[in-house]
Length: 132
Image (cartoon, rainbow, N blue to C red; front, side):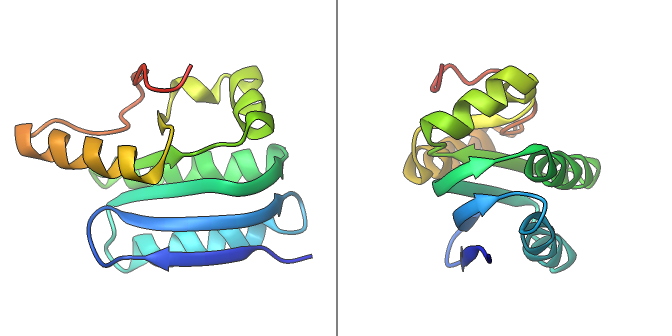
């Protein structure tokens, strides 16, 4: 099985939309796509999880690895529109505490615009309060 991955970089932050299940078989595809964006200089990323039905520890590992790399480079990775199942996996793993989480891509983009205007970092590990 493969993931459906699309990228919208017409405006910052860059949005990578994922469709399908993120598991041991598909996590390398997600890692490759996110790494390519970071290698191209993208430092503000939104991972749109609207189409993700399942995410196992392999997928979580990819998200954390990319987040750590982007954070080291002074950027941010935000998660948007996680389905209830994926949201629960994030909560159980404790990873909901390290990502900026937003109910939609639009909310993540609005937060990024607001945060960049005042010079602070988006998705820096604090709870956003937007998704509980």
